[in-house]
Image (cartoon, rainbow, N blue to C red; front, side):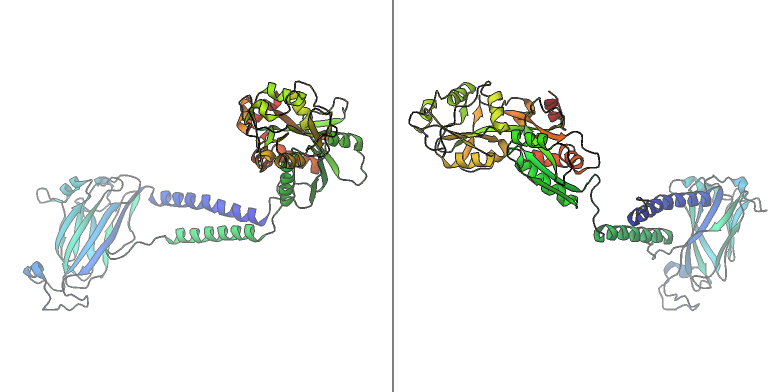
Length: 512
């Protein structure tokens, strides 16, 4: 099965361990603490002054006030903690010691108890009252090596400590705490001296951490060193993209990125105009003759007669009028643009510009951009007749204007940038990156992707993708279209100044 890959197995093991280990720890702690438990531990057991712990006092050692007690030899100081480590409160009736006045007994092997100080829980100082004998009975008593503790009621997590001064014996000799709890137990808990540092991890936690680290390193190694798998949705085969030259720069970049991510795919872009591309697709039909499958891009809708072609709306593309930088005009009204393309205005000085003849650099009849200019700006009127082969001089003296036709958007931009007084039209992204020319505002509105979104700029069009019928779901055509329209290709479209149809702003515009 596909999911049973090494990285998935390691990831599942790590995830299960990350879930099970904390849960097991919580269950273990709950089970060990459940019920009534009294824990005891030695927090300190140390010699005092010069006592080296070998049973021999050093006479010259400064023992201080401890020397005031008669018979004091080899003094040691011990600190014991008695605490409720269970999940239930302990009352005085829970102690099972036959001695009704006492609950627990502390025995120091080989040493004599000389003095005891009780240190109560700061949150339960009332516990001190239980250590005071009443009418000579109860309370805390000590004699010889033994301390008898009263039946001290302890709520959950409450404790008290005993600071005990001892003589004789050695620090570290055995200390026993005995007694019983009904339906519970008295047990020794982990001891730690005041000089000890707590471990950063317990042994179970350290083991779990090591296993998780090994899992993560293994997973990282598999990901880094394995051969990369193609992204989901990749397909293999050959595809040829024809049609719009205005949209060709974006399509070339999209083809490069797709084929880099999807080995085994081959996509070429051979654009010669929207109309020619749609015709080529319609004439090729669905015949499988070993040639690459065709995908046609068009600036605007196809002719109604090509009923067999299936369309996908890709993006809203912005187009722009461009003029040579020697023309310092920045804005034209729609009426002024129409007068230029009717031949009513033939010099820029009549529009507030320099004394230069207007040279119309146009696209040929296969261009969707040319048809878009006619529909969006020129009110359905066509451009003037072809009058120049070099875009600079008239073919005949009687020609009123200078107008040439070129086969691609790139040729138009290069020619406008080269010829003084030239004006042409282009897809916005390509125009914005060409030196020697600048774009024109139309009726005060600048061409931009923002203007496309808010519908204030009129020289725009939907970019259509056409296929010969619906492509198979597992075909390269279907995969590439999905990548361009709905996948990562949207970022490429935005970078080239287009508004993808499958975005909130683009969806509204493309549907309308």
